[in-house]
Image (cartoon, rainbow, N blue to C red; front, side, top):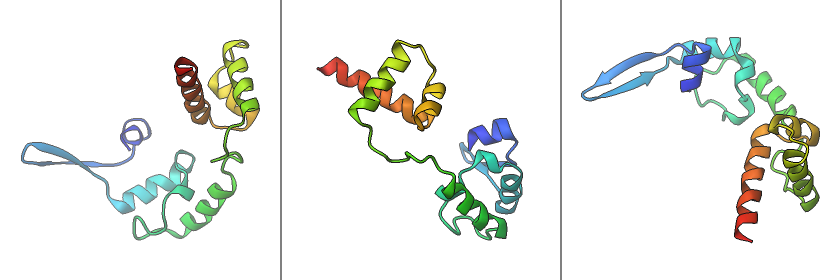
Length: 124
């Protein structure tokens, strides 16, 4: 949310209570902003009616985001994929983004798997 405020102009109001500051976001202002910035959100991961009233377009966008999710989401990594990942990153010097596109995983998924493989190699 802080990134959306800083980089994508999500409207907010600061409120001070005693010694702390709080960020408040108006629900209607959020939905208006979300409609203009659909590419920043994955609506399939936002439970229905989390922020009421939910506009009509959200249901359609939620279905669209769900059907366009990565096909390997929550799929276990195989030993072959691990070896290929390791080779592409350390031998071919490819970026995590490139590797993700080539093997059908997210950049973040590639990053997490590389971290786990490094830890595994250190302990063995």
